[in-house]
Image 1 (spheres, rainbow, N blue to C red):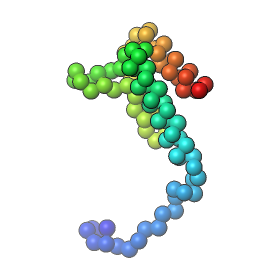
Image 2: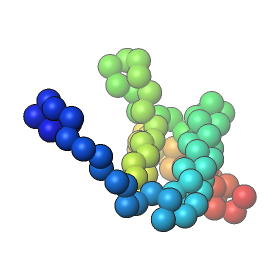
Image 3: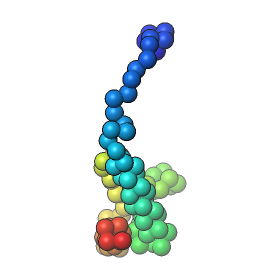
Image 4: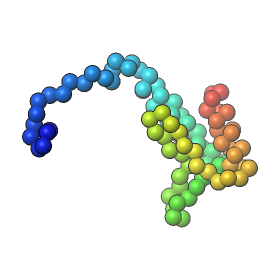
Length: 89
């Protein structure tokens, strides 16, 4: 659509050309997300809470990962253990 009117066909020139790497990355980041969720459920990591409700422990972007947790020794060791499990499993 261009200014509300159909305006021809746009041919994609990307996507499949990149091969399977984007799909592999998504699967690996899914494993990281599950690793973080398990560590939080076990109490190894104390996540940040927003407005006494929503829990924020990690955010995943295209090629970045942000980890949010309390700034205490327990959480730091928990993140370290989760990263170790993520890298070596």
